[in-house]
Structures are given as structure tokens and as C-alpha cells.
Image (cartoon, rainbow, N blue to C red):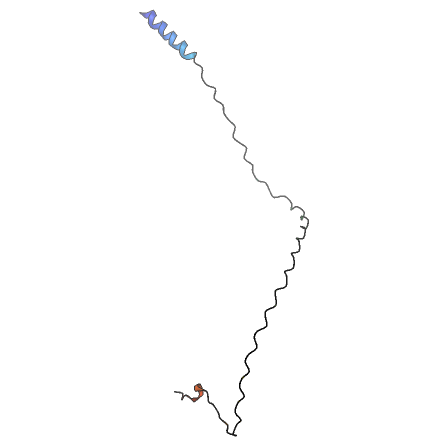
Length: 95
């Protein structure tokens, strides 16, 4: 019985050792860019092109001539009496 136990232990050890273990691949981390001091200012860019001139609008139509008013009647000749009309605001007594 001693031999049976020993043989089974050897077979178990060999079978576990023979298993294919997956290879672990370690991906390196991406390098982090550390900003350095600012460089000198670049040259000024060239002037942009001038835009197109728009078209001048057309002249609007002239309005129609209005109708002429009716001639008023001639007033009566005066008799030499002067009439003074006082505005309502000035005629009202103030409190």
C-alpha cells in the first residue's frame, strides 16, 4: 500500500506541473508628458484678405401725391368787436 500512495502522489505532481500556464503580459504605462516652460512668442500672422463689397440697394419708389383738400368757406366780415377766449385751465380758480 505504501507504493500505491507514493505512485499516486508522483502522478498528481507530474500532472499539475505539466499544465500550460498562460503567459502574463505586462503592458508598460504610457509616458506622461510634463509641460515645460513656455517658449518664446511666435511671429504675428499675415493680414487676412478684405471681404467683398456688398451691392448697393435699389432706390425705393416715391410715394403718391396726396389728394388736395377742400377749399374752406369764406368767413363773415367782422363788425369791429374783439373776442378773447380764455383757456379752461386759466379760467378755473386754483385752490
